[in-house]
Length: 522
Image 1: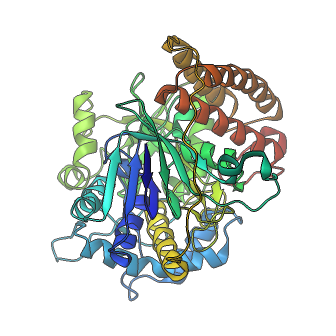
Image 2: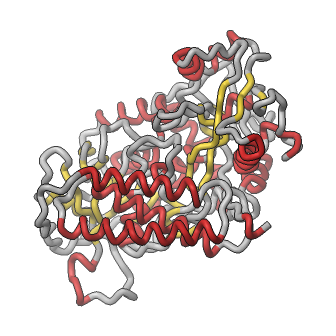
């Protein structure tokens, strides 16, 4: 089946939905297709607890301060021009969220109740309790569902981008400039592989936390956009920079890991080791509010020194009623595990949370492939550098999706015709593949990455990871070439690809910066 659209959006988080809404408003007579491999609302956005960092009251905060905080957290690798662009657009993008019906918490005086998180010099985090992402996702989906020229395809998995190579085959050289014409997509319910064609395509597929054993990312975060972009030969950068959130709830067996928001430390919580002693003063003068890379590495060091698998977050000294009001879901989660936060510490440990690198884009969200844009965690914009400043990610997605929509509106040509795109050719010969093979290999990817490519790395660990991943790649390629296409198989392919890229970029990194730390570079 061929489905023709003017615009194809791959992903249903804040990046994809906000882009689709703006494009639909700019082109009310054009068709927008959104595809997502799970339910409409399942995305990394849904699980964002903390909020969105925005300078809103220039009498109490400044763009300059937010810019400086972002540059410091990025450890010298941010693009200053991009940082300035994103931060100064923040107020306008927040106003759009408010107009779209997103609700943010206010205090008793009727003012926005702004939170503070690690690396921020001011209280500037707009939040909706501890489920900000859920509230944003709800509001944007409501608008999308009411927009007549947006078609939503849930349980549709993007397999590969369509470029000249699929259209013209061997007639195109590898050095040729490339253009994207859509994507081949697996209908997960009917098992049919559909051909989605479009004049413009937005990658908004989120992150890749599932390459690690312990992650705050949902099961859908399998690096799909990275895998597709890599195979299409789009430019990638900074894949070695993985942000580990310092304080995921330590609850063995639970996946994904439940996030204890950084806003809890901003609210005044302390980190303590097994002996109940605070330890952050040994690592940074900002204590618990140091940037995430520093706090995560400090916790990792303490755990190794103590021989333990977790440290603790202490909120016993905080006003309990105020805490419950701000963090009702965190409180409820602790209660479900019989943790009385009024007198007991919360066990926490770092977990893979966010990737700073990805598909390289310019200020308009344009990738190195013509008519292919990217926004959100899948992209590498230059905003985060080596380490993302807390709550800058939702803002980044809004700004780049806005810029992409503006850029497309300025260059859209009604007369451009798409080439004839061939249907997907199914060459599978094995219809009875054992699923355990995929499950085993997926778990092995997680083990390899967690053991060898975690918070602290070394040349020897990276070499071991590379060798093991190559074996998995060969096994997966054989399955992919001969077995029936399935979501499990496609996810494994992208996990192996993403893991390989993280390792290869790590091997080339010659200095410790932010989210990358090697024992051999001390």
